[in-house]
Image 1 (cartoon, helix red, strand yellow):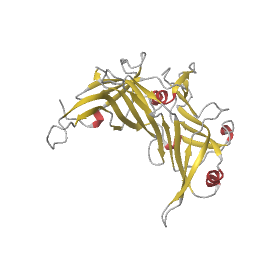
Image 2 (cartoon, one colour):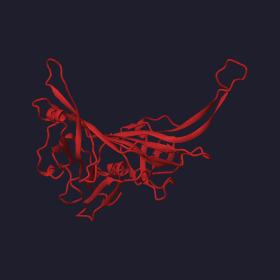
Image 3 (cartoon, helix red, strand yellow):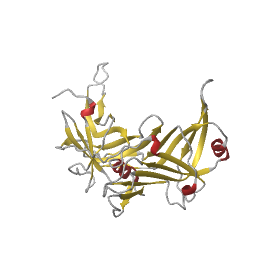
Image 4 (tube, helix red, strand yellow):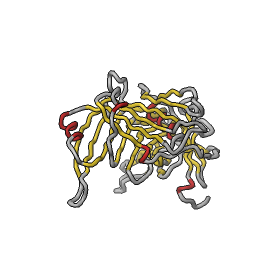
Length: 325
């Protein structure tokens, strides 16, 4: 066994052919900055009275599972696996040059596709089947790369031998690559002007539940329940437009586009990109901040709505060099 720093921890993902059965090898290795995914157990405590004042006399395992999160920079190739886990269904277009277009939409079931999550470091090499994504958050601030946090649940891990590999064509997105637009309808987003923001957060919640059954320590399933989208955006307080949306109860559609104009896919002219589109959402809270000597900011909190005519709350389109997820 060896001492190690967390940089030596590798995290891989493989889409399972049979739900809950480990798929090998890992198909994507996700560059990460933060990591706290670990095996966990639930216990029952024996606190029977034994004629003494001592509180307990033992315990027994009742469930074992994996849970935790990873966080890092949003990259053009590996992030597609997280979008697949977040939304549940997707289609990939025929290549144009070396570029592929992947369209992700919310699968309307409570058993979204599962992935095996691999964790490899200097001391452990394990695979966690039935990996499901509980929450995916995308954060953008002016001073840093676009980043994500992804929370997972799974079955407990088992020994697995994996060889991590990373792609030089997995391009990182920067704040200069982001454009956020608001419009009354999704159809109007194409001609809308971008909204100048200082920061932005988008969160997809899937409200997972580990489904245990009598007769086993391991969960029989991990199910996704209510699907919800929320977030917030901060911008300079130099007018009443966004505040008026909140106070009037106005719903607005949104597009969040990332386009890496510094890089091309293969030898073609297509840039890596990710675009989220939200059906008219509720702008629910306005606040303002800033000290006596600061430029005032306003923060608008929003919640996604299922749009009957749009047939969605959110969708995502990813253009990159990966043929399929």
